[in-house]
Length: 363
Image (cartoon, rainbow, N blue to C red; front, side):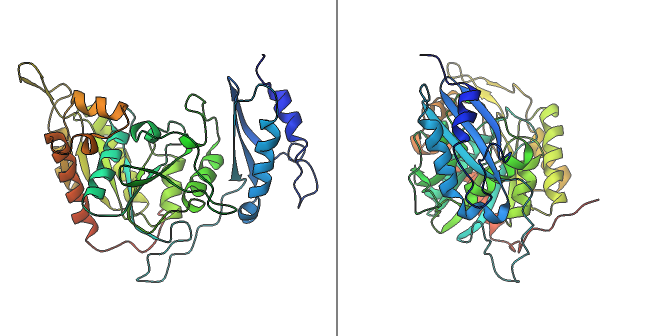
C-alpha cells in the first residue's frame, strides 16, 4: 500500500472547521510544519494564544480526520501560538507560583553550548539522583528537535488524558517524565519554526497534569536559541547546570551558554565536566581523551561552582541505551556516586535565595 501523501492529509484537514472563525483550518492558514514519514504524520495548528486552552477538541478532530486516511500509522498534532504570548508578570514577592507550573518548587535547566557532550544523560541521571534523595522530581525534555529522554528513561507510547485539555506525565525510575518524543514517532523529524517550538514547550509545561514537585529538571536543547529564551521568559528558573567536556572547543560553547543564562537573569548553579577521563577496563590505565580539568578551571575563572566530573565510561552508555540510567541501574557504583555528588551540589545551591520571576535584560 502506498504511503499517505501531503495532498491527502491537507484534503482531510479541509473537513475540519474552526467553530469560532467559521472556516476550515486549511483555508484559514492554520496548518504548518506538516511532516510525513513512512505513514507517521505530524503537524501544528496555529491559533491565537488566548484561544489555545479551549481548542483541544479542534486538535483532536484534526488528528481523527488524518488518522482515518489509508496508510496512516500515527498522527501527532499540537496547538501552537501564531504570535508570542505576552510575558507573564512576576509573581508578588515571596510567591513561587507561575501559571504554567504552579506546583513546582524549583525548575532547573540542564544545558550545554553544543551537542554531543552528554547533556541528556547527565540530566536523566541527575533527576534520578535527586529522587533518590527523597525529593519529588519531574524530568521535562525541552529538546523539541532531538528528544532523547524517552529512550534514556525506557519509556514509549502516548500519555493518557487527564481531563479535557491535559495529559498525564509518564512515570519511570521514581520520576514524572514528559517529552515531545511521546507525541511524535521516534524517527520522524520535527520541522518547526521558532514560534511552534515555543508553543509546544508551553504546552508541555502548562497542559500536563504535573504533581506537586520539589524539583523539575529540564533537559534543554544545545545552543542558545528559542527554547532557552522561552523557558527563561515563561517560568522562574531556579538556575542552570552547564555540561561540557574538558576540551577547549566545548568550553568555548559552554561559556556562551553560561553567559546567555546570565543575560536573562538565571543563576548558574555550576558546571559539570562530562567525559572527563577514560579508565581502561582491562588494564586500569587512565587516558585523558578530551583533556582533563578544563571545566573545573573554567568554573573557577567564571566564578561559578564546579559540581563534579563524570568519566567516559562504557557502563554509563550501556545503561542509558537500555533505558535505565546508571544511578538507577547500578546505584552502588562509583559512577552513580559521582552523579549523586552533583545532585547534592545542586541541592546546596537551591537552598540559597530563590528567584522570584523572569526578568529579561536586553542590551
